[in-house]
Image (cartoon, rainbow, N blue to C red):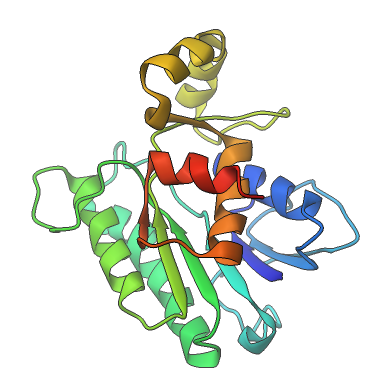
Amino acid sequence: MNVLLFGATGMIGQSVLRECLRDPGVRRVTAVVRRPTGASGAKLREIVQPGVTDLAGAGVDPREIDACFWCLGVSSAGMSEAEYTRVTHDLALDAARTLVRGNPAMAFVFVSGVGADSTEKGRVMWARVKGRAENAILALGFAQAYAFRPAFVLPQHGIRSATRLYNLLYPIAKPLYPLLKRITPNGVATGEEIGRAMIAAVRHGNPRPVIEGADIHRLANLG
């Protein structure tokens, strides 16, 4: 499997990158980023450029990609709907449209979030935008397309979030993780589980395009 990864410097993206590099079934990982990831590995190709969706400029040939993992995202705090839409919806769709034109046989996995609004009409701005992005990507015609909706994700292996508040909360939440796992098993996942589940969704498929907590855990255990 050759993987194209966006958002590899974010908390979930770092976790997905780590699992891709560790998985013997992943032959190559092409990470398109705005700043270096700091990761290394024989099968990692890192492309640093300001326009992450400029695939031609990055030398990315969609025909050589088996799966695209879209982990690029930001917190909606303090953002207008137009600003959040540009980052969350427009960038993803720009890349996805280019990829599906070049290779509709590939898989596209979009990292969304629990509570995303598929009706696109709810009162919560970020949920509407995420739901709109999900709907658009799932309708593009990829051989496989999935919207991942994790809830609370616990980073591991020294991985940190780009959001300062999250980094303050994670040390508090980490000791509580086993309790949260018992109370709401489908409401929490580790970054490692997210990465493994995304790879497994492409490798084994999933009966539903929208993948939430229970499916994330099931896929993570498939290997």
